[in-house]
Image (cartoon, rainbow, N blue to C red; front, side):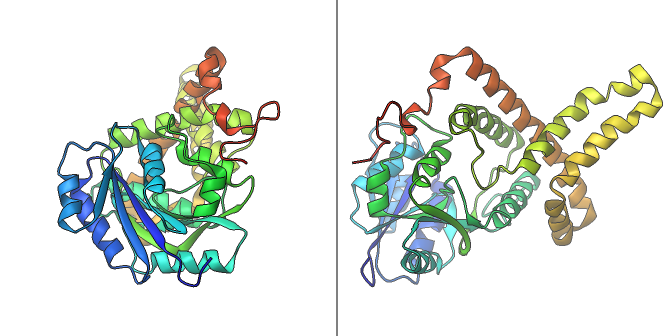
Length: 345
């Protein structure tokens, strides 16, 4: 790596005109001196292209709407930097984010990618759901700081030669391409999550959209975990998995007092307490920042999130058992009968 390598900042975008101006201005305000910027527009139907062009930022189109993975691949093919910095179009980077990522990569040659941590406050939509998601995502991130097993793509920097070696994002995956990519990358290199690289994200601010996303992410991870035979290192700790299962088990356990008598209320109460205990640090963090009233709301919503994730995992398990096509969703990411991984020489 040269002393001041060129960093290609690539912004995949689909209909995020509302936040794109803030995103691009944060890139233009980076302290790092050697940057090129490219917006990869995934066939937006809003004013995204006009927003980028008004700031003098180059825009290329994917041609056909293909999702974030495909947009990131198009960005890599249309830039020339020694480092690829991916930034979601609904995220604003801290001014020193790129400089800190470059410094970390320069100091640790065995690290192939650096991922950033999002602030707990939402960028634009300050709803109760967005505050929940920002706090939850931030705490799970800072508690995972260090070596991780799947990519956090909202803000991340990947060495160009590592990207060329690992191969592109799987364009067939629209919601779990970052987990897939992390498994492939960490077979050969370390990947690090660090609070030195920061950004503020426009988190999901409507409950229905958040739950739908989490359900499908849980469902779509099943074929990958079945092949890898392990969770991704990061969010998916054993404690959180048990917390989700305990929350889900509360629902059928509510019938216990009706069937066995009032004393059996200890069963759902105990399961709820166990679920809360599995992420006690997060609840303490929320209480310190927002007090008891918001903590009660937060805990209630997180209970719903845990149930939703468990339902997604259950649906994915059933789909995995019933569908060969679903079982093969990640086959390209795993060597079979001597076949090399994507991107391998």
